[in-house]
Length: 348
Image 1 (spheres, rainbow, N blue to C red):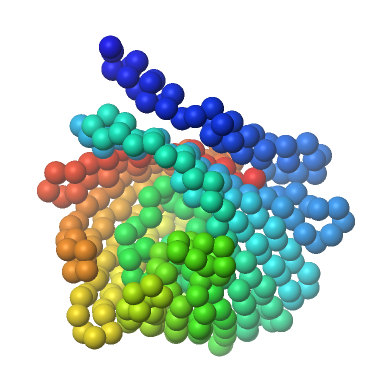
Image 2 (tube, one colour):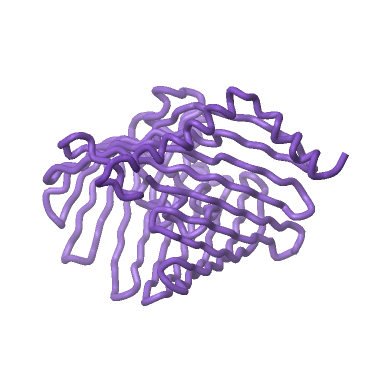
């Protein structure tokens, strides 16, 4: 049996009913185009209300080059959002890892149609000086974590530091205060489990399963450079483990060049295990549709006994602002591991 036939047979493992669901989910999004006023990525207005509906999905292909290959229907999400005066609302539900197929050296196939609450919040912004958010939202820490949608990010992969130092989402209260048009202070307060535990008590949608999160943040823009610092405490609900963390982030933007770096440090409240990680990334825009990306990363995780450094080179093509085709090559500095990652993502 030839290699191509073997690969074809791996994909046929997917059951007919599962395939039907996946195809249906992908085909639902273009139905929005039937509205004459619709523009891709801007959602569709519901009647004459301030409420809009939209969503996004992404498809990924990974190749370890001399290792396993994988195809992933990574996620599909549906959103309802509105803004009326000083008030705004966002509701986002997501199915993650809808279909996963790993083949070649290691074989694995699975699918999941669990619906998770990614973001549900109400926001009040009476002026340019202060803003209040209540619900579940992306923790306003660093820069990368505020770009949760694949199509909007520079690369398909997330830097390791963004998932290992602090909780990606906070369920609670966010207070933002801007002073002198430059200095911005942020306060995060969470005293309940993640909102998604209402639907998935054992598997909430977050990088950490937490029931406490207290954090402070400060940011300052200076011409083309923006500086941010965050620090906080959180407690993991399942194992009652407490952690303190600190986080630094810088972003420089000028004409076609963007340079961004983030570094985080996390330590057990009892002075035990330490995790620190960071990255430095440059993005050069050849024009409005084509981008070249380079990134270096390092992680030293005593908790998982993970100490390594690696780099990646990437390319992103955006035929529209709300559609992206991405390619990236990842490799560690010891040349023992490498991977090619391709993705197609759309915001509708």
